[in-house]
Each structure stands twice: as structure tokens, then as C-alpha cells.
Length: 101
View (tube, rainbow, N blue to C red):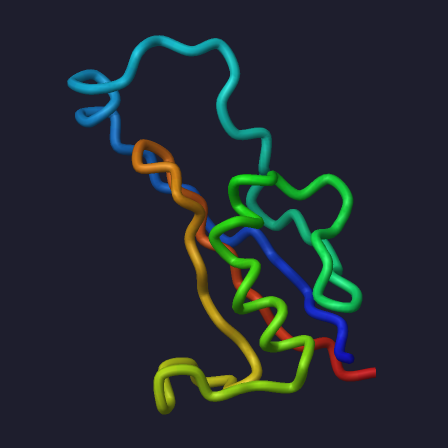
């Protein structure tokens, strides 16, 4: 199985949606742009947000098994994927890529 690097690329914040629909909360996402994790054997790395993992798990597992070229050429690097977490107010985009040792 391959290792998969997970890199937090960018967070988008929809303040208009938050004001209209979200109840005030004290703690939201603690992920930082540029933060990285390594998944081994298709497992969730320590410290990665469980909700974000839920959004990317199937792609990480597929990449770890050697699958590639999702959606017939979607990504420039066929051994990668760009996945966003499921937070509708402040989603983070994560770049997933196979680590070639």
C-alpha cells in the first residue's frame, strides 16, 4: 500500500450563510493552511479532523491501494485528488497525493 500525503490547501468562509443559518459556536475548525498529514495503509492520520476524514476517506483508501485517474483525467496528477470537508459554512480544501518513496 502507498502512503498518502494530505495537505490543507485553502479554507473558504461564507459569512453570509453563517449569519443566516448558523447558531453561534465557540470553536470551529483548527486546521491551518499548509498543514500536512501522512496516511499509512489508508488509515486516518493522528490529528486530522474526523469530519474532514469522513469526506476524503474513500479517496485516500483508493490512492493507498494504487487506484488513480479519478473521473477520467480530473486531476493533472492522476495519483491525486482535491477534496473539501463537509462544513457548509467554512469548508477546507485538501490535496491528497500518493507519496512515492
